[in-house]
Picture 1 (cartoon, rainbow over the protein chains, first blue to last red):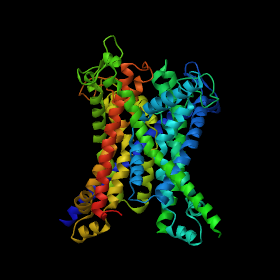
Picture 2: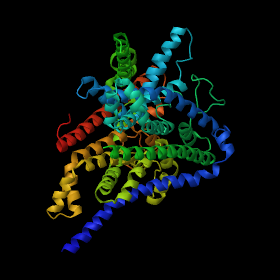
Picture 3: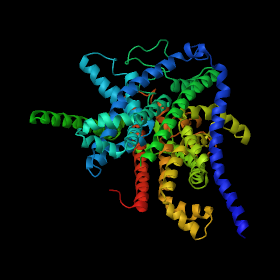
Picture 4: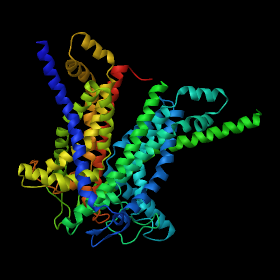
Length: 301
Length: 308
């Protein structure tokens, strides 16, 4: 009886474990397909040449260039705001206060807003309201009130704000309370404590957030489709007010709008492989730093 | 320290704190701005007579056709609501058992080494951009499934639902695992002490105790699935049909916005209708996330008492 029960149990546990195997298999199949399908397209030229012949030949350089451009602006916008919010929530805010609850609620809900709704918002707010308003007051038309890198990046920044906040807060939590008490006892003010004691120790955790944000921002397409990304541009963007090509959207356009899908798929595979390699290596870096931070947090307690 | 300097220091401190506080409040402002601007662009359907000649609220729920660009445009939301429901349901039917079983396994049965591997592995799956999942489902998986099962239509709701499942498994897994891990060790010790096997302890004691959190995880995944855009835009075939058949092409609310906003005439009835769909999406995901959050907090309160 007992033995029978144990065998039955082991079978059930094994079945549960097969779910883990299934997840691993999904990951392996997706990666494998894209690596096998894409590596042949990879070459130096692929990464440095623009696409030609209606996207059935050539490389993906403009898409990489535009992606980096937009991610830079996104970071400039999102990192200071996200870090400051996390500092407020963890260092200044009293937990029971209405403002604290409201901010937390807002951050949680911001994380749950669908990406396409951010796209709608970017169009309605940044392009039409802010951009259109700027154009109107400057007495011109079509400079700010149209899709461009700036608006796309700011939309992405809003979307990724919760990620930076959560990562930074976790990093701040990992700094032992005794360190703060020590600094304060030595006569440091609250801000001096944060600036010179807490933040230096939280840097690696904040970097995790930054890295994961870059990775997520690189792959997001829905929020930028209508706020700045272009199907195809024969030139590279120079100013934040130019439209841009970006890798994720380029993949979408190539696979859904191509005049000759058979000629485009290998290029799209190559582009997907580049995007995946980028997001994966960034994620891997982020995950490694984070598990390091977490194990330090456990030691700290 | 002189009084003068002390005063300066105090002033500086409160300036910094004020700035940080103001920046932190930005998150609240943003949520309200999103709501306000989506509302602003959808309200003309209710109040602007010019727009109402084209479309009124009534049109959304009469008939079963979404054909915004035609001589006789139809704006019924039923086909795309049904599309969203259909694809979300398929995604959850696939993702929930897999994610919850994996979470249960990794927190109850997996050894330390394996456990250290499972979580980062799932996080890697979460790190695959949705456009890549969509690409995979569109270019590779659709043909494979069609040949395997002899389907008539390559891009259908099952194909999209499965790919969407890939996207939500990590979300459900991580929240479910948090919930299961939150169950105190004493529960397991008590069960094992009474003679339960590890399997019985996991399924009869731990999982029921964590149930509100696991439900929260399922809701969380549902919110993600409803709001996901690129996967369904690429893998579902993009036809707004009113059909319960999972083997036909379909179109979700998110994909409708993504597919049509690029070509829409600014200020037209169609334009405002797309924003109204966005408003519905915002409201639905907001409610789902709120419920998920409340369930999870409820579990934590039940297990650990009210947090200070």
